[in-house]
Amino acid sequence: MPIWLSDPDTTTYLLLIVLLIAALGIWLRSRKRGAGFVVGIVALLLLALYLCDRLYESPREESVRKVQLMVDAFNSNNWEQFQQHLSHGTLVRGVTVLVLKPTFQLGTRFNAKVTVWNFDRGSVKYLTGPEPAVEIAFDAKAQALNGEMIPKHVRATFVRDADGQYRVQNFKTFNILSKNSEEPIPGAP
Image (cartoon, rainbow, N blue to C red):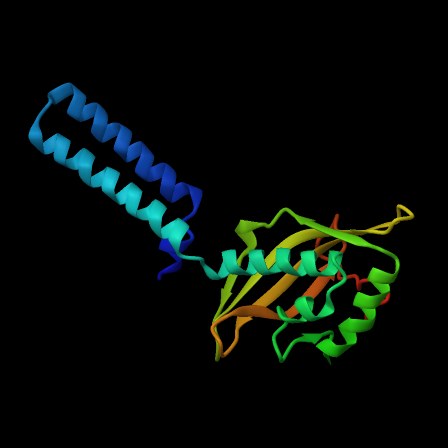
């Protein structure tokens, strides 16, 4: 399914809605069969776009869903569930994913809870290479029971593995305000 159908932007919807309103206005004014036919066609196009959007998950939508599943796994202290969303070739700062486990355990030892928000649709990048990949950006915050917060801006690259699922291949954390200067997560490699 093409991305522009499975994950249409707001502009596409607005364009079709404006076109539908204009066609409807012309039909109401003239009451001609041809104008009614145009209204029907535009309405069907809008319905088809909506159904494609709802029925097919785009790589960006799957990546956002996987981030939320990882947050849920972290918040419930479930490493196995968390690890399911990491690609086998995942590297963090040049080292394998196994180094994430001590960081995961450190966060759960302090009863940290993670929240994510602000998935920036404008900064999504579809990458070409040996396998399809998508890079998404979002903001995240880990908060311990003692009230200490660690906010970060995150850029994560998801790659489609052999089983067809998108999983995290790489991610970087940045200062949440500047979003440009890379900052590691405390306790992470």
